[in-house]
Length: 139
Image (tube, rainbow, N blue to C red; front, side, top):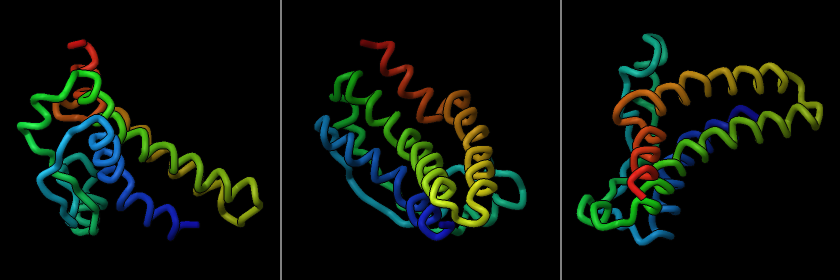
């Protein structure tokens, strides 16, 4: 249960940006495997861990992003966070429903993790949800 959630967590965000971006014609200039780009957003204990975990990253081509429609940019930005939150509900929720020991606590913990994640992505200027909202309003 924990391993499946961690494997998804390491790749789902960037992969979803890439998948939705490509569906809307946004090009990417590179991909990487490195720690978080925003370590200051994590609490002190988790900061070091998330700075060193092998998270997948996708680097958007700025020229392509600049020529994309506001709708395409909004979808691409929102895709990463949506694809992070859904498995946080689905994986531990499925395990809980199937009666896996400890799944209820894991479900609660994984979703408590989503609260600061959603706040951060909504409130900070470079947050994906904030950028998606700005792009959506440009329509």
